[in-house]
Length: 394
Ligand SMILES: Cc1ncc(COP(=O)(O)O)c(C=O)c1O
Image (cartoon, rainbow, N blue to C red):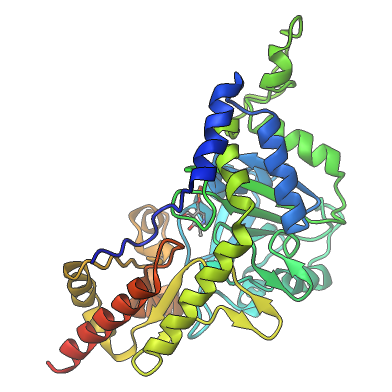
């Protein structure tokens, strides 16, 4: 038996949707992308959504919309993928990394607040594994302690790296409404995919005009051009200007079609992912801890099955090898950023991130995707239990 880690779940209806765009005569950014954006805005409850070619681009657009650059500081968790932090360096701002809370993957609000200074223009939080961070609470705390008329939102902005969390809910909110800005990923391994892609959403009630945000985000993703490709291609409408030398980050319709098609069945996909997580939790509860994906007032998007190997942690590589030998692909999310060459070179050291280090040493991610049958899930459970007991007997 082979159980891959996270293959895309592509159905006939997805292929048909992409083929229809390929046959339509318009394949780059256009009407299907707009439809996907309004579908995402309806689904997330965000006030506005602009699709881009990655979550990384969406994070950077959020920073640029807020005018963040040299001399500004942005606080980012140390336990995340590089994209949450590299964008801060791309805009020339200063990166402040924060440790995880003891026994948690993410930092506590008080750890974040301790890193905020008068130069902090934004805080990035990560909905790790799809578990929604309490971004609404963080916004409130930042407003109480660090309000300033010089900042576009009157306080440091909260940007959610929601690469994992499309469809997560917390209190009466959905991912997309919790932070000021939320960046989603539709990369090939994500719950909902466009092969590569992402979207930036912003919440209702920001003190920046929605139309301005939408227009500027689109322009920042298309060379700083004052007209989009569809508009420019119309007969007699060739004239254009470049308002700033911006990047090229737009999402083509051929990819938006795949996302739109998947969005139509997305709730079903999330429900199946939760079923698999529950099977893991039931089948493994006596040997390891599976990260919870539901709480009293929240539900995750069920993106990653993170487990804590506990006393078997020092044998993680052996467990990964044994599972690979049995045909089960696993993964490790994440190597904290100060472990990586690029961040070490900037002067970050793991000695300052002891809780992130402890989480990293114990974590193992199990396969989780909507092509998994119940039999696959039981097979993973059996093989993991077997690997752990083999190691425990040594
Ligand atoms: C936490 C996190 N943030 C950001 C990203 C970047 O997403 P993208 O590849 O869409 O830019 C990823 C991708 O895996 C991620 O896991």
